[in-house]
Every structure is written in C-alpha cells, then in structure tokens.
Length: 92
Image 1 (cartoon, rainbow, N blue to C red):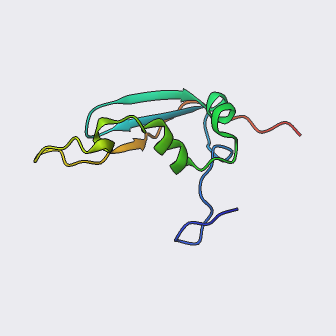
Image 2 (cartoon, one colour):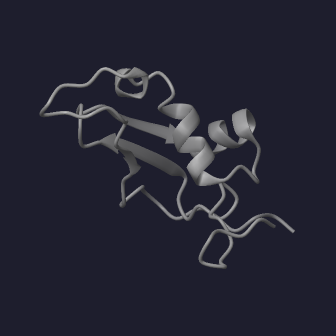
Image 3 (cartoon, rainbow, N blue to C red):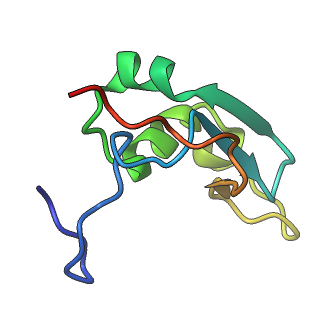
C-alpha cells in the first residue's frame, strides 16, 4: 500500500467509515453526496480518497484558471465530516 509523505497509509474508499461520501467547496459553494458503493464501482475499493476528490471535482471552473483577485484559481473541494451511518463490516 502506498504511503503519504507522513509515512502513513493513504485513506482509500475501502477504509472510508461511512456509506456516504460528501464533498463541499468553500470557494464556489458546490456540494455533493455520493454513495460509497457507487464510488467503489466507479473507481475501485483501493482508490485513494485524494484521487477520488480530484476526479469528482475535475470539472470545477477554478481548476481551469478562472480566477479573480478575491477568488484565486484552484478548487477548494474537501470531504465533509458527518457522512451518515457507519459502513457495515465487510462480509467474511
């Protein structure tokens, strides 16, 4: 398993603690809620959460140089806490 620059494992969809994954952007106000099972089908259970976030926010206009003095370029999408009920334990 890949490790991040702090020497710990990258969080993945497999390790996500809830059945819902929520994203929100503090810059543009865009929000989204995704079923974990749908994201696993789309990206695979071992997809890193940072990669999932990048793919889900790929069409953000701030990723394409749309900037103003008050809103510099760069998407600010982040995962939101309180993602719903716990993810059930995997079947043996």
